[in-house]
Every structure is written in structure tokens, then in C-alpha cells.
Image (cartoon, rainbow, N blue to C red; front, side):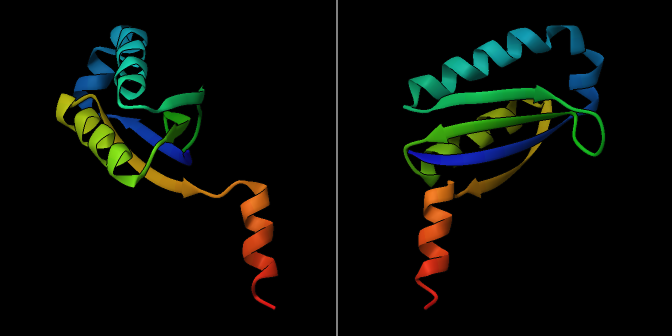
Length: 97
């Protein structure tokens, strides 16, 4: 599974309906699960982003579809970072020679 960091900000619609946010998170968790992925961690954050999630998906295409589904709902805007775990980081650095 590939890991991703998803940075999220509420849209105006999402902020207006913030009390429904936990239900939307549960629905998003189920959607990603149905696509073969999972949420590993979720945080409400202070600063530039409103929320941060660490998720796994079988491949980039699955996460792209998931992100588009989130965007289409209109409650959040996302920025996604593909994340390499420490062992992959070490392999990549070692391969530099």
C-alpha cells in the first residue's frame, strides 16, 4: 500500500456545516475502505490547514478518485503528498551511491 498525507481546508460550505464534519469523515473513511484503502490517522489542526489525514491506498489512481470524490462533495479542498516510509527513504538515499 502507498501512504499519502492529505492536507485539508474547509470550504465555505464545509465550515458553514461544520457540525456535520464527523459524519462526513465517517463517510469518507467508508468510501476509501470500499476502494481498498484506509485512514491511518486523522487530526484537526491549527495553522495553515484545518485537518490532516494519513491514508493508504493501493495506488495513485485510487487516491486520485477518492480526492475527486471529496472535492465533488464541496466541503473540503485537499492537497495530497505521496509519502515514503523510513525504509524507502533509506533505500532511496542509499541508491545515490
